[in-house]
Length: 209
Image (cartoon, rainbow, N blue to C red; front, side):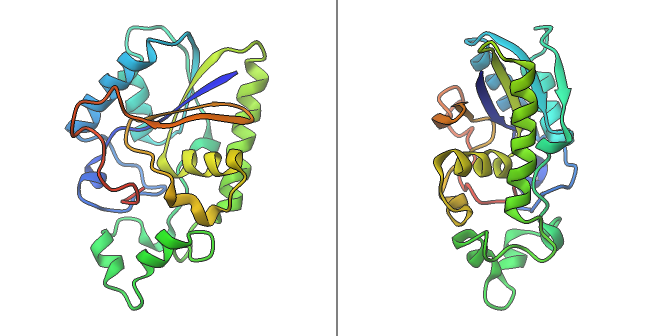
């Protein structure tokens, strides 16, 4: 099985530097353009099926990218974005203004310095691996499978494949509608944005997952 891991397109909260996590936010106009570009990119693969996060931004991205293909799309709860607890709905600047700049601590060591009430990264990894196992069981013959999910989900899975600490999580850049390719247990490529027009990738990899 080859996994084509795509992050959803830009959302209105991404554009406003606002933390999303498990909040259900729709795509921006740019996000819909990015999803169209992703669709053109994945047509270069033999995609047998698609699995998506149940959050609206991922579903919208998949619907736009796969329009007219007839490729079946299945939402998987395990692919939802990691919860950011009390930070959800707040802007980066609001969190940075708090005592000690907890945003900077989180960027530097997200495993050790999670947002208050945020989902522990090992738990995120466990559910993502359950999703990958389920997908692998449905595609035992080497199919190409599209997975439309989130920056946190894809980064956690990449850390798992690389065998590195989740404190390295935000050293991996995963832009909106980028492609990361894995043939478990190998990570093949990460954050391919060649299909996006100049300026279509999000400039800050840590903002408002």
